[in-house]
Length: 489
Image (cartoon, rainbow, N blue to C red; front, top):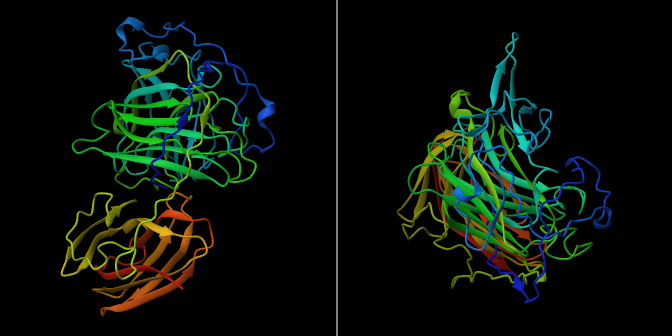
């Protein structure tokens, strides 16, 4: 799910146009609803920014809030009342598995989303029936049709839950999800997502297009985590550019997106991120990305997301005359032998935690370590995790050219016979496989594995070599060397 992005900037002209701001009409459609509406089926308000700030639900005045340079305060909630103000917020209700195979039911009740001690608390709950059957409930609230905004700085100060299986989110969806069509055509802005079992790493993402595309940035704290202390998460959203921040530090920027089928039926840029969106806060339990809760996951106060405030700021006007950036592909050069994999012979004892060349990753209860020595990489697993990719070695920036043929090869052995999967994937293209996940049988002797494949989709400068060593029946140590990806005639 996690993806890198191209480094592009929007082209902005000098014509200034008034921003569309708070609006209060229309009904959002579910992601499951039909893709029948067109852009002509709904109107987007274009009134000037309002200076009226509703502080009825809070004892913090506008004068006490630090206003970012160039902005004014549109709306905020400091959660200093005794209950969630339903003039500002909606409780959502959704059944188990509504999206992403999540395990929780979202119940519209102050048992799962409530105000306490100056905070909004979203509290997931684990229930065990008399028959021993386990179920989960949680809270999800939004500002749809009450505080929808087109462009601005949107921020919240909060801390996230800690525990395997939790996925807290501070994010945005369109006021009218059918304005450009069914998700993902309508667009989605994820301001903050943090996995409950990796609480030092933050993800900021946009979803768009058809087929589904996403662009994503990540930020990892050098010290501390997002569960034990509060942090401020924000975006600056302008026509043709969205920037992500944590504690005032920008860590990601994106300008390249579209809506409609890529190359066909496209709406004018910067659609879909040119319409009113609303704020959503929730804590999911389980699902495709975080995986199921473990036996060690607790559902006490540590399971709660606590939100100190939500604030929306805007500029007086925004320039909406922007152009989509040219999607210029920057292809990595092969080495003198024609190999696109850097440090392929592991002669350099490089860092395995940064985004340069090789990176070792753990997900979904995977435990282990990797080290480079004697011209090989050695992956020792302590726990296989719940997914095949729970223990993973990757290298991105593989130049995949449409119509070209490739050879992918490597040498490997295991200290006990076991399986491993190899692939060449597309982090920026919804994780499609250029070379499909392929299981290899490792023995206690070095073997050479070699595969030929054709690149049949559009060119991509960020393909990724993957070795997946997670949940495949063994935690035996694996040795890999001489990894090659080369173009063949």
